[in-house]
Amino acid sequence: MISLALLLIGFSIFSSIVLALSHFRGEHYQGQWMSRIMGLVLLLALSGLQVSHFSWLYLDHAWVTTWPYRMMLFAVAPAFFLFSQPLLRPQPISLAGYPILLHAVPSLISPLFPEGVVLPLAFILGASYLLWLGRTLFQLRQERANFHREILLLGGVFAIAVGVSLLGLFEAALPEKLFYSLYAISIGIAFLLVQVTLGLRPKLSIEVSEVVRSAYASSTLGNVDCDSILTRLDTMMKGERIYEDALLNLSVLADRLGLSTHQLSELINTRLGKGFSRYLREQRTEAAKTMLLAEPSASVLSVGLSVGFTSQSNFYEAFREIEGMTPGQYRKLNAGNGQPD
Image (cartoon, rainbow, N blue to C red):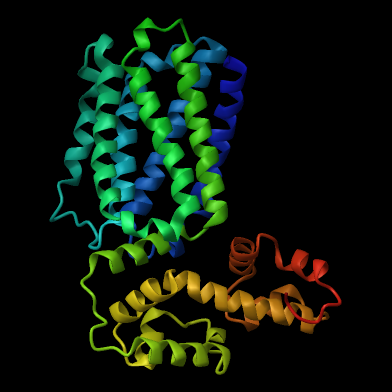
């Protein structure tokens, strides 16, 4: 048990570094500064907990009884909530209109708590945040079809969190180090599920925000000829190849179609079942597939840039997300076909 815990502690810390450098970038959290900051705080708290678990389980240094451990323990649930809530609400959180600092109070006063009540209080607090967040997710139940696999994976993270919360209530009755081994394993498995989820949907945060805005908004399409607009949109993409413009965004495309950004966002979400970002990446990837086979001498980078991606990393990320392989692998597997399947 301890060996598995130590292995997953190492994985958790490595994953935290990778996520901080690759996922929590501005391009993934456009206009969602609170989610980005709180996501980094969450990674820092979980990494700190895992370092403390390593110290106790392997080195026999009782860092799990120190006040920094307590503060990190009480910081996890509020940080996760404040990371998730802006993505799941139609309006961004503001410092002026939301008591953000109140969420830091339990962590700040945790060193004052009696030793015997620290873990039960921390996990009762965590369960309360999960219920609060669950209520928000329930309001978006109609959108579950757009993120079926991702919801199942993240549901696993929720299940782990609930299990650990219940386990924490009975920590005193467990054999020495068993609770902390199980807690470290749970954090490691949660990191694994998050990595798999982001592997499926690297830009999940952007897509969720787009769908949420559409789900909460009253319909803006009452006077819009949706079928005609979708036909025009298809012509602009396949005929005019407007996706090749690297600066193309929701606002620019909405102007060309004579719609507001809210109308176009709702139209794509409700009629095509995806967010604008995903739709645009699919169009560019489809064009790239054709070019990769039709122009075998062209470099992968030149293909990506010619269809509108701004860098090789963005091209690879989108292609792998949609096709499940890199552009080079796709070209190799389909060499000689002359066109995508």
